Image 1: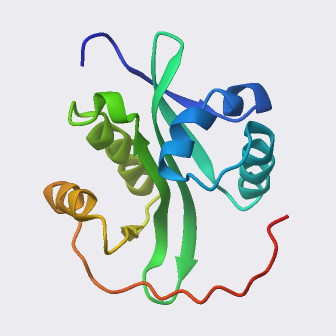
Image 2 (image 1 turned 60 degrees about the vertical axis):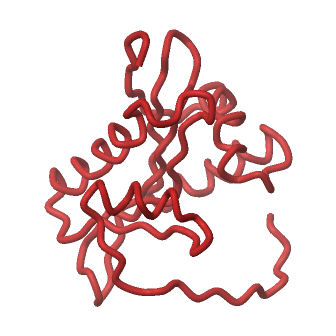
Length: 149
C-alpha cells in the first residue's frame, strides 16, 4: 500500500460514522449512517468488535468479529464482516485485517476461527483458502420477515 495503514478499534458513534461508506460496500442494504451506528451499538452488547484499517484519516477497510461459544467449535472468534474499499483491494489489507481478528482468537485461547461467505462469492472464497481457512459446511437461512429494529 502507498502509505502507512494503521489498525484502529472503533467504538464511539463518531468513529462508527467514519466506517459507514466502506461497510456499505459489503452491506448495501444499510440505509443510513445513523441506522448503521445504532445496529453496531446493539451488536457491541453481544461482544461485537469493529477494527478498521485507516490511512491518514480515511477508513479503507474493516473487520467485525465476536467471540462465541457452541458445542461444535467450543470458544471461537466469528468474523461477521470483512471489507476493503474497492479502490484498494489486492494490496494486502484484507489479510492484515483477517490476521488481526485471528490474533484475537489466539490471544483469547479460542479453539477455532470461523466465518461465512456467500456461495456466489468466488473471489472471496479463493482469498479465504489462501489465508488458510477451509470450507467445512454450508450455511442455511430462512428469512422470517421480522422487521429490523
